[in-house]
Length: 145
Image (tube, rainbow, N blue to C red; front, side, top):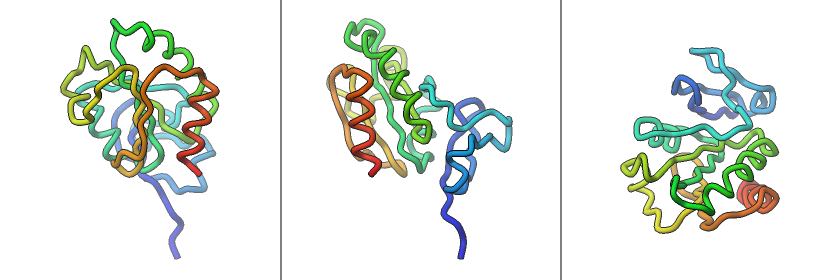
């Protein structure tokens, strides 16, 4: 009987890694570049990396779609980072929609900021509007139960 494992895309080199479920809390490192796979900090995605991270990660992945001109987005950015630090087994990522429109287009983002939760390449929930870190954490925990 084989142990359950998850695919995780390295936020540093974009290599896809297979990580046993039991090792998710043991700070797994990338097999290609040896950098941490779960950074407890949001990674910036671009047009080339967004689709791979969203489609290939099998763990809960929260993507903040934001824009540089959006004041609520800017206000939420530090809160999103704090939430990421409290949920080290969840991948947190950001897509700057005014810079990478083509990366956001497939996800039908209509308001900013919008956080979209993905698991196994599928959208499982979305939340629009700026939230404080404690509400982000509460929302993410409600999805990963």
